Image 1 (cartoon, rainbow, N blue to C red):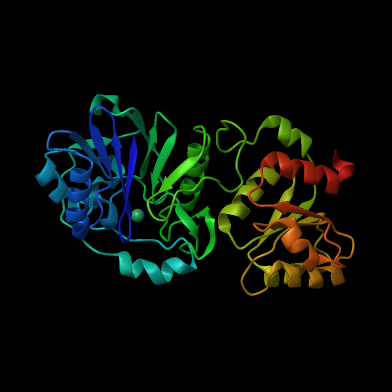
Image 2: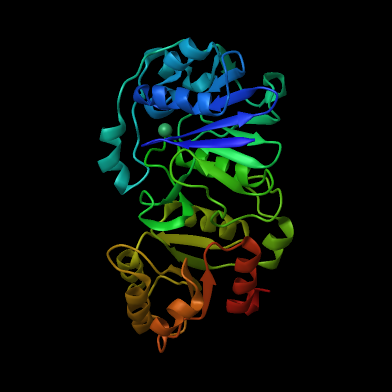
Length: 359
Ligand SMILES: [Zn+2]
């Protein structure tokens, strides 16, 4: 059974069975609250079989030394994050997005260093620790980040994802990137890996439970190849311009469209897209246009693009539903609307509709 303790910054999870494992140790100042949480749940000394740090950051490993002293439980960390915990610092935090530049300096604190008792290399079956779950290697946020998949389908992903975008400010029901990312490519691959592991109830290291994930895959699909039948159905050539401020969405689309045979150009907002399209030598067969973007949003971009490119198919993508948004597009001749999160199958059907000559 999964118990959740929401602390001021991170979430801490307790997974119980015959025994119990603590997933993440909070920061040094969270220790008393975590010990109370264990006591409330009747976890006495000896019943806690493991303190698992999903990664070596201050707010996930910072309380581990004191918790081990109090409970006697060994501490597990992935081998690739062992240096962080041996030093008791985060290492260099790389911002994943603009918000990261502002937030990360506040999170970059040291903590009591420790030598891990268990070094994780890849997967560990946790049944020997008395819980029906396993540890899955999901690097990216740090090079040694891991997640836990319980037998009943809960996924505790540490800082692989964070509830909401821009710290939950936008799209609170959407999963977003944490402020820090050591390797965005790895994060993306790890998200795909987690998604492929069955039903998706995701418990992030910050924010609330996330039930839906952006462009989801149908069934277990190994990153990076899209399903061959979809790739075949969406097969086409020429350039598709993807306009979206979210790097993960652009990356997902680039990856899928390239696999389908298209050339992909990317723009991070409307300004970049409009500028690109004013050059008449740039041939574009279709445009996938996000609605909510900084600087110039999709609505304004659509209006401007239509002056130069009256005929190119433009597919609007948005987290808002079509009825909420379609009124705003009246008269602007958008070619279709795709509500986020969408699947590769839905995207395929739209591509066939927009570019019938290829199918
Ligand atoms: Zn972290």
